[in-house]
Length: 483
Image 1 (cartoon, rainbow, N blue to C red):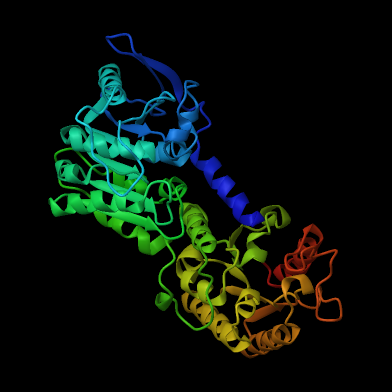
Image 2 (cartoon, rainbow, N blue to C red):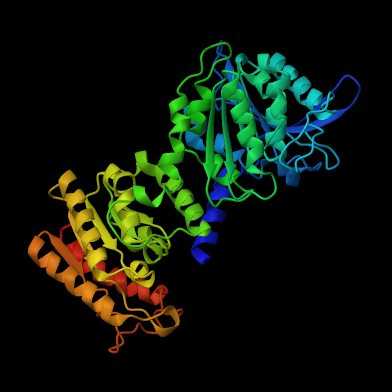
């Protein structure tokens, strides 16, 4: 749980904007009404060049008048240095007052009806957008809108009332009036929603997408199993989201929709029958959400994490937060996911390891398999398959198999199964000849088949002292392998 919460915090922090990238401004309408907003501009505005404008609509929880809270979720995706370099644009992030909505429409229930008058906020947003287009070199054929929750409703409403204005839209965990969905036919849409959302029902997005498609419009739908209302964390982490968005042009055929449609398969945990091998899988909602979050983060970093030493495994690997510090002379990356099993690793070895073209791989897996009722036979067969995939790509890749660590009584003990599995790991390494074993059983065994309380406080995961001992063992192997 500690690791999951830490990761969620890190992802939310990454997707939040610090604020200093966005200038604080205020739009004044002709009737004197004011709209506070933040504006992100391209890092370098070239003379004679026009740039896209993204309207970013926040959720209900960020309403107020501080002109800051609207940057809390999602906006940071546009402000990341890599995003600003690849996709220079203006991002207009207005803030809705506490007693208002982007559109005066109910969020609860399975359906909703769009009012004839959307309310005061939508005209203010459009007025401010027009003012920005007069002030800055903005390409009106590349006007985009995205929003989360309340902002997702605002996004759907804008493109159904004013489809002629927008080149594309990304509504997140929102909804609209399904009877009006056809009106947005000219606008390519990538909609995203968590299937465990109990605040805005997923059917609100599903119906809008279905209505658009029935009318001949172009709409991709990404649904996240096990994810509740905070699907914006996953949505604005989608690796191809900005690439897809900025490829769209008003009045032109939708571009590269396959990028959006492919993301469900790539990031969400697929059905069990898709996983190779045999043995148990983690299927709990918390794990499916963590799976997507971790693998999204891995995908972000893939291009700049080539030729590393990969640590591949479950929570014990994921929890090694000081890897880079502990091995300063090596380029190391962490590809552990808490709760994963050997079948899970077989499924993700391609995208999470092979695509990095690793110099070496440290593999630790099996304790979750056995805890979930799997057998040592199933684990060793999956380990052999993973090693075969690694060697198929690069016969010279260095592979370190870590023995499964002992567990204590509080975590559920099955030392006989662990020792049997570790025996087979040793035997396999001996026959293979190119695989090295790191004896992470003996260094932690208390002599009775259990780990030691001073190194494994919860009797399952090592603490700082435990990781230090593992570091020493791995350092000797790295030196032996001349890495």
